[in-house]
Length: 385
Ligand SMILES: *Cc1c(COP(=O)(O)O)cnc(C)c1O
Image (cartoon, rainbow, N blue to C red; front, side):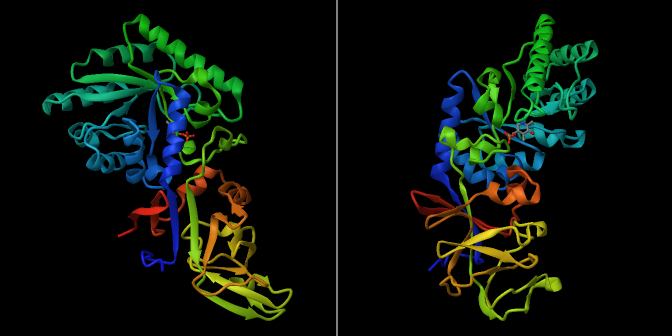
């Protein structure tokens, strides 16, 4: 039984659901708009390589990451796809980026000059997207005549191919007016650049929420992140579009004991049993997924029943109250996902830590092995080695 387990706590990823999510996103934006799959931070920790293979099989050829090392890890497996680094890349990494045909984000003429010269030396062409700051105040050219001048200078550089320009929404989920203003600032800026002869194959600004709720911002390319995995950081649920959550988090019971009324459980003697209690121990803790602030706030499913977590969550273990629940050591416990008629969703959990769904899932520790299923069959395992 479960002889594939390298430890009795693990993540299961449903590749069929992921494939379906990607199809829904592709259909939603239509043929005229390219999907750039955002797989930064190892696809929000769910595994950039196995998931991108699914996207590639659906014909998705554009991928976005945050750092050069993430880009190179994708490049090793996929020779042909286009990979954009969305963030700042320091100059000493340019050579490696150029040699591996990684597209860089640029927002200064001086950086472009350095990149151009290096590309020339390497007898290569460097592909870039220009970042534009329409109101996020993070990275990118700010709207000004000077910025336009610099960008038109970049267009003249022989070894640089300016493939795209992008901006990023600050509050697409919560502030539609500001979002619209950002969109107009962005497209006006592009129009003015057009008057200077600067044209872009890809103009893009749409993130997950925009893809679902604002077709009018799609432009030539969209950059969905969190919705690919079936989650959202907004109050609007992605289920209404047919998107499904692709992960479950499970563990096996590692110990069971009867603790008498009045005795305590765990560090700091934080939980005092109000009655004789069946305490079940699980072999995962705050180093794996559940920050300590969630202590006594979460529930888990044992034998289809909800059980309260009790005491302070430890680094590698936690205890739950399973009084009156029939169970034994080795039984599967669901911490995220379905069991019987019950379901625990990421949003039910992270609301208690004041976190958003994106932040919560990106904090899963790599030491939690991931098992990928297709047609209910285990097809791929990814574990920390
Ligand atoms: C992370 C990120 C995205 C994807 O954001 P989601 O809200 O997860 O869709 C898109 N664009 C940029 C620049 C990002 O940093």
